[in-house]
Length: 479
Image 1 (cartoon, rainbow, N blue to C red):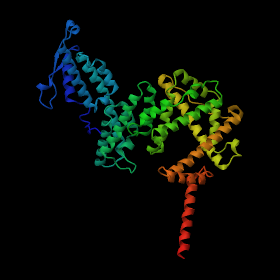
Image 2 (cartoon, rainbow, N blue to C red):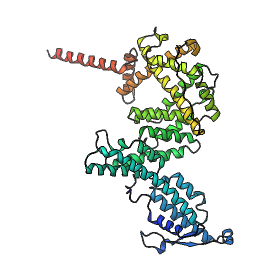
Image 3 (cartoon, one colour):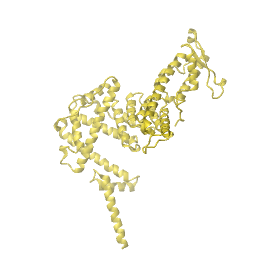
Image 4 (cartoon, one colour):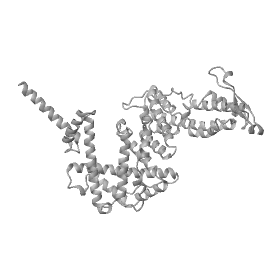
């Protein structure tokens, strides 16, 4: 974690101010030069002097001149990096103003460039100050001067830890209550707040690196962080994106306005399996505690997978969802999830219970496809607002959306979900590997295969019965 940054010193670096003072009193084309390190006392900033460059000098810069220019630019960049808690945190708007492609090439740093960078930093500082003041106003409900002052200080700490990252400031502003106050309605410590916010900044920086070839990754990741206000463990985003990049896309890419319901259903189930596998392979399924975090992480994965589709493929998927077929299929899923699917009434209660969960899963993931397609199309067309899938008001005609094939697949998915619940229950109760563990797992598998819808409850009942029986045996033995 970085050292705590005082808001009074935020975006205010003594060395940077030396550059600014030089630029303010010089002509736009004046070239900045810094004193060499051997000529300044420890801890003191370099002083800035100005020179000019003739047309001939520009064409034939000496090696000494290039070295001096590079040194000046290095000191300039270091002064900016210190304001933002490290070079990796320098906002993109500031980097753009710096023209980083000119660094290390012997080119001079002009007063014009210095003032352009200052203007970009001033915009970052203005947003920071506005966010701080607006969030401080939220804590007027805390009575007493001490508590108000404490809340103000913690709000300042939260935004200082953003290091000028505009997206981080948006996320912190959205979740300022949960960042400043814990679940017990007590103020968090400054160290706790700083750690939480810097985790968000770290995630955003990780996303930036992961999205160089696919900007949709960053947009999906920011939406996830905006939804939760919590960062993922270091490196987990990389694993999630790797899994998303390896997920099959053919079923999604094949969709069009003429696609039958079973093609949409197949794409929905495919996305569900891809996201589930990614959650497991990345460790997110086990490492993330809250249900909300898992939901938003799954939504991130869905959007990341869909973002790999071309613009034309996205439009084709949109066309598939805009037909009457997709809404009717979604209505079928709703019937399943509510236990009102009339097409599975002859199945066992356990299968019908699995059908409810299968319907909920399919309903959720078809919605994710709808949302993800719109998010990515709006990213590619910033001025166009996409419409979501329409609702279906009529009665579901099963023959129009796959008939017996859809019903059979729904039952198959239900049995698959039930089997996974049994396996998850066994994994909870039996740890480790080896012959002994395998033997116990086999016993539990045989015991629970008849209770797939609620294996943990049935196992608890069995264990309770066994415990009572053993106690009775001991009592009888004593008698």
